[in-house]
Image (cartoon, rainbow, N blue to C red; front, side, top):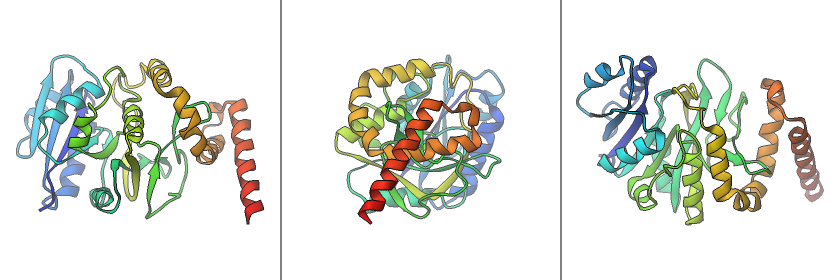
Length: 292
């Protein structure tokens, strides 16, 4: 029997997405895994409450009278969980195929594992959205592989500076020892903050590139309302350190993914940043050519 895995989901409205998310879990896990599902109903006002109350068996549902946000809900669920592992999952993320085995295997193959994430594709699209998180020269986090049509590291277990919490796995003991997600953030940067704290404590984060799921991304009501405040807080806490470490390590990966934005989000390009990324990519490629 596999170790108990606690799957934690925070939901606010979006009933149809929650139903699909739960169906995908039931269809892919069946009896192959020992798991429980804990759901925080974050002040939903549609038919979500009635649907969640209809769930039984492996499901435990907790209704919150008002909206508390991602960090508070998941920290609370983590304390209620009984599993050796915590699997954080957004209700707009839809698992498929053999998605969990590759993630669990990372803990068997690597030491000092922090978070394990997976590859995420945009729903109803052939484009990828997440293969890992990298940092720009300015310190802001960015999903590597946004807009790509192919998985750059298919079949690999690859280390990254951070991963998204839309779908990620961590040992419950480690999560609680490091006090979980920082509740100063509201629906953004909580995952990056904890990844950085764990990394500085000696842990590494990986993506199991054999695990691929679909993600709508940002479907939760109010998901982007605090983006600027969340980013400012992240920079206040880690900005100088990120620019001296992760930004340097991630420069070529960041440049590659930013340059690709021209092909799928041309109006989202900052010309100065684009030129900077082009110079970084060209310089690194030239240095590699000289070595060869």
